[in-house]
Image (cartoon, rainbow, N blue to C red; front, side, top):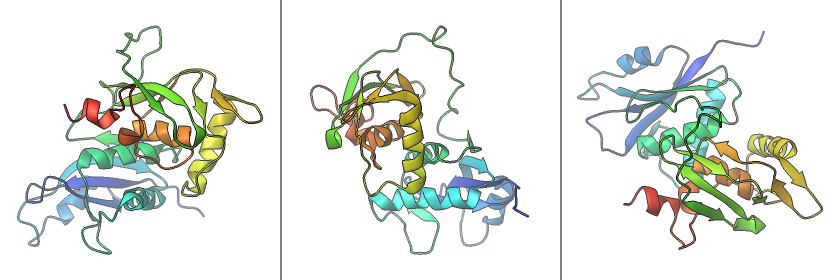
Amino acid sequence: MKNEEKGYVYILTNPAFRENWVKIGKSSRPVDVRSKELDNTAVPLPFQIYATMCTVKYAEAEKLVHRYIERFTNLRIRNNREFFNVKPEEALEIFYDVQLLIDDAEIEVFQGKAPKPKRKSKKDQAQPERHLFFCTRGGSNGKGYFVKETEEFVVLAGSELRSGECESLSPQLAEKRRAFIEANCTQSKDKTILKADYTFPSPSAAAAIVVGGNSNGWTRWKDADGKTLDEVYRKK
């Protein structure tokens, strides 16, 4: 019988480590139990829980998170260990990207920033400031804006998505992208056009759908002056 018990993927920080070091692993038990088990003589200070992802597919989710991190560069501090040279907030963004692939995944944030609030209806939302950014890789012509309060990214209606997909795109995400296009786009022989504004949980998730491949949204989205989203919102 298939195991339907939920488990966790976690991001742990430690005051004794460098600021951009995290431990990302999985556990079938509550993460506070696992973090206490790791508090031994090998580390001078206890671990702190930064964020967790709860899902039945926690083993698969952990592999996806590790794969996303290592696809861009080798950030694993030691081979076969679960420690990574990546900022916890960047690891959390990858959690949100992986959440798109896991239907029952629930993310809880304990450090660094408050969890993303539930989205209000369009009627109740205040009109956000629209600093427009563009994505034109691989024949795409996406246009959208960043919502600073929630770190979501809105791709605007009329944006043109890349018709094909990069080889680097995982089969799971490719399947999700095709389902997204079928539900939210109009298609002709050579164009795939977004029918209505769509809010993605992160800039990278938005870029992946627009360009049809894994992409760092913070550097992929650029404004009319050529400045990346990272330059406008993170490097002020």
